[in-house]
Image (tube, rainbow, N blue to C red; front, side, top):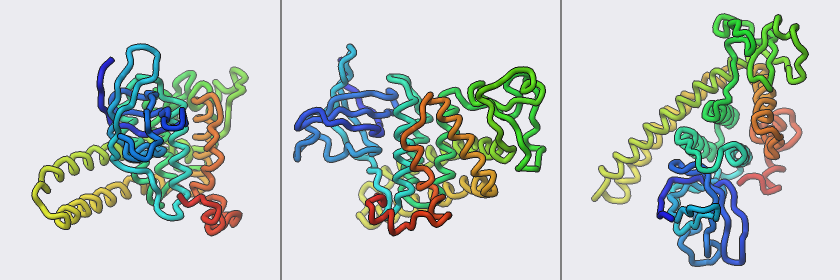
Length: 324
């Protein structure tokens, strides 16, 4: 047994007894781990009410050498996942990300870049803007981290090039094999029957490519923000509370401006291309997970699609407790 500390995101909580919880967490340093948080349900406990779903925490635990659950001993809250009032979009998108992480990452295998991407995405989902783009960037980053990002510039069978950048017609059709993991040229499509072949568009493939680049840019900005915060902690020693808050707000404003710029390439796609991308992404994510995520049904709400069609007024969702 060894005592460890790690930055972690809470993915799942399960009641274990009248006073304890079993937690599944995704850590930067150790990957996904499961552990027992003794006394976590008591009013006074060493976890300081920091074990809410999707909370970002600094976790202390005893790592067991056997197959037994690790023992979580203490947690300090870094950031609670609490979307702003009536931001049910960010709430549903956060639940979707939690399920993707819980179902894809392997026990004790580390994914430090994916952890940073998830942490940064969840932080920004607490605000209402560009939920669809943030989810798309996360999905692309997840596929990249798992080694499952599809072939979109060449036939997955013969390697024939698809000049994605040189094709301007976003509505042009192209075939994609969700099992083989990439586009299929006309010759290879005619050569063999493919039960997992779907028709998509050049616009959808370009949106996927933009999402991969957006995930990398989100990571770069997250690292920049971490460096700013570390420098700020040392610089604000001895300052008054108001002076410290003023500097923190300036850092935050600069981060938000950088972050918003990364979303523009995705948001610039016409709605038809984004819808085609969503359909393709959901089919491919289901193939990667080998099941359909339960939270996938809530993504239209997260993206405001039903609102745009006039099916569900925001006031109705808020009154049903979906505002988070």
